[in-house]
Length: 177
Ligand code: G3D
Ligand code: MG
Image 1: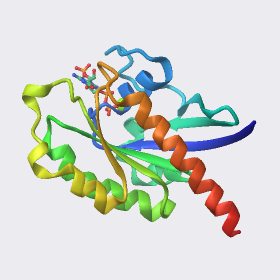
Image 2 (image 1 turned 135 degrees about the vertical axis):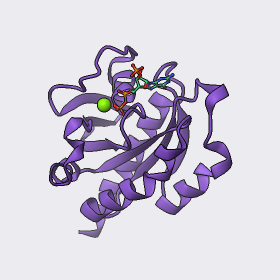
Image 3 (image 1 turned 180 degrees about the vertical axis):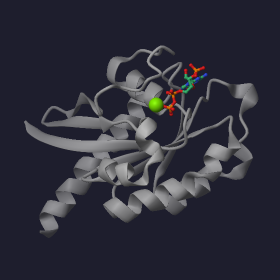
């Protein structure tokens, strides 16, 4: 068994569903009662990629501290992968992605990225599709997926995909060094 430890971060505007996505993935639940965002800084989740590869994800959630740029620098430090999240029903959260992306890359360099368009269950309210989220993802060199923390749609497979890419990225880095 080869084991990897990797910190990953979720980023994006307030109320896009970062905390809900983490809870869905780690505990497979959805509730609107953990608003205060995880008291400690991260949750752990073990992912079995195949019979010989296991990843322990340390998943960091941005909380109210996110207002402070200096705190965000710490947050990004040593991240092996990241998930940029926007809310499919609020265009403004999509338009601010660029800013989140630059800030992250500035601190971490190139790392595997996913772009989550969250709240896909609110079909009638979706505003972002005609603004080409796939193209935004391409520019970020990220994979785009629609997710719903409410129904679980897209969540587990996308975190797992990130785990796979993080492992590949770590392996290529080791080879180069
Ligand atoms: P944040 O951590 O990015 O700030 P939260 O976002 O996870 O706190 O979620 C913000 C609000 O969106 C919450 O609603 C939460 O229940 C809701 N939400 C998160 N993900 C989804 C989703 O996939 N579908 C739907 N329909 N709602 C979602 P409230 O009303 O509790 O503030
Ligand atoms: Mg939160």
